[in-house]
Length: 200
Image (tube, rainbow, N blue to C red; front, top):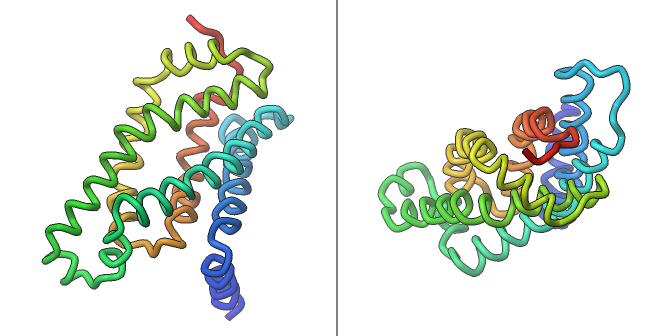
């Protein structure tokens, strides 16, 4: 009963304040996943607070803020206005809606082969480098050095997730779905890229 009430409460907040809901969920999740990576996966005695702050800010500013704009305003409202009606259809209706299926594929392609490689990852390395006290050019070089490995990990997780997210999630739930799945992804990214790196 308590879990059901909590779920209804969160659903109401998400519908009334979708931007704040998405930003809050993303910031808390990203910070928590780095904490999990450090304490459980890496079994560190002390949490690296600088590293944890990088992931908190990344979740707050980009994963919550920028991605809300990308997934809700650009994808759902401007570029793919039929996405909302497709997501609300039944399974049977979705299977018959070829145009809606093409729209899902276009969204996944744009997100995974344009947004992630050319905007998201360069921005991640800039935020990380800024907090670590490095330069923009160092951030760019680290992005280029890690690009192939980062994208392989990204595509293995996010292509199937976004196929489902763009097909079934109501618009207000898109960023929170990404945040929830992203807990595991961000834990892996934190282990892979959280520590200061040198350019080879």
